[in-house]
Image (cartoon, rainbow, N blue to C red; front, side):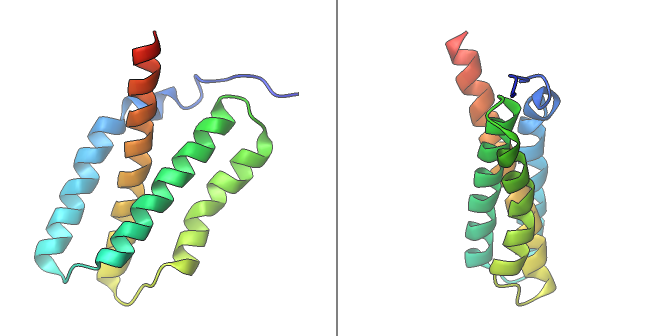
Length: 115
């Protein structure tokens, strides 16, 4: 039996704007210090978006399978995304959390607009 528990991720949703700023600053600093790994950054942002969307579905009571798939996305990203340097790993981490925060912010704005 699944129940709707939107309060579980609420603290994360409320911190999404700050997360966007922090991860964008980290990626900006990395761009100044290292060569831009655009493909890695694009994949990681997309992975963060997908992960957050799946976990939001879990928080809204769609089933435990969403949790398992959602928490598996970061591992999948490390395996699939080309990590040619330590800078690419930095882009992977900051891009993933940027995408994650972007999806949470979108959810927050969507829920706020409906109420």
